[in-house]
Image 1 (cartoon, rainbow, N blue to C red):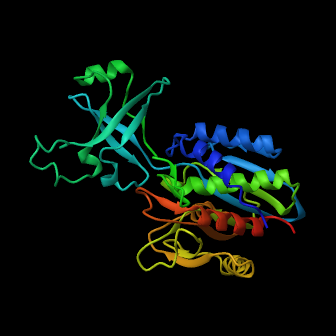
Image 2: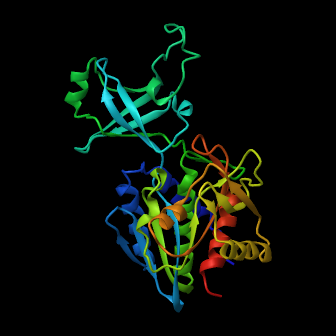
Length: 345
């Protein structure tokens, strides 16, 4: 069984989580991941849509299997520049917008400049606005206060900030002594870290993959078409994404969740059953769940016309799309399950 390298996990997780990569702005994190995987000795290719494909020869060449994680995260974009010099916003993906009030952020301009700011309610001061505590924190009532001396739209334009610029908010990355990973974007950077740990371990120990394998680091999952570009020759696809924790669910932060059904319908019965049996036979902490308000890269690939069996696993994540948290044990169980699926004995 694969050994969980806590030191490497901490090192690589910090790098991945602190590399801003909202959907549509993922080139920096893809470059980072590609450099690491190239060093492990695998064949990599950046696809036209920006995703990274890793191709691995297997012991059995009779079929091609795949796994993936998405590295695009939630984020924001400048919708317009207000007369006051603040920035109106539009969402990238589906963040829980009330959790963004008072978050620090960065604004990336198209000419390479980076400015700092704070996301605030449009009624941000209790001593000034009578509705400071009651105003909705939806996207239309949030704005960015830029940390530059600006008093007008013209001042902001002079900085080089334009409509369509990317706004990234602080992930607040932390690993606690009790083993919790608490940060934004565990969905789905924790899964990307799992796949990097798997590839490093297999490379360092000269392990073989069962079948010809494609591993994808996907870049548009948060807007629904992430894995639409996978190789049409794959016959099985186990994607790694977050497991849900909460109302009427069995999942928890220390377990690997195996999804039986989401908003797009059931996952492949035979492949899902195989993963359940692997988890059970190897004494992994696992749960099986149904995610009613959820879609994954399996759905995107299916919609693109790829003919395959699809399944989904991932560490249980608390407060998804908000201030997320999981436990190292859940990440470890996810790593072990994808190892059992992909690596030859």
